[in-house]
Length: 194
Image (cartoon, rainbow, N blue to C red; front, side, top):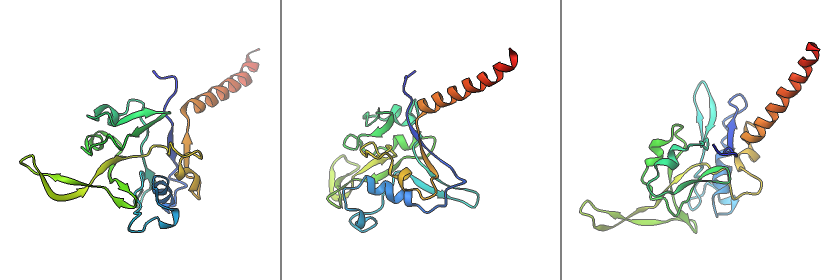
């Protein structure tokens, strides 16, 4: 087993108000367009997490960065791998086959269009006879939370949540803190046995 467990984001449904600022921040963190254009035609909001709202619960759903990630295990082109404590998609390698979407037990992967210079990257349509047609469709990739691995401040969704409903969890640090708490608890109770 790895000595360093993958980080992940935990959401508190008691705090989430469903404002979707996390979705906007996520989309902007992965966009090359200026922030003030978020949601415009040339810069649509394409988050890698999704706020689910039902009468019972409101909570963002995103990748859990599984230790034995089913999405990475099934990717036929090895576009999904572990890097710096996160499960990430190498967009340039992804062929949009949807295998990872089927494998993800959380439904945290969605095919998103590839954008370059504010426009979707187009690709030719493959016909049933194996030839390409003159028609073009947007190129797609497996979009999922990557913990904003390119951001120095960490995940954008955690930073902007007005209710602090999102937290970046470091399992190794959490384990250390729990071990210290347990040791301190033992210290307090062991005095009763003397």
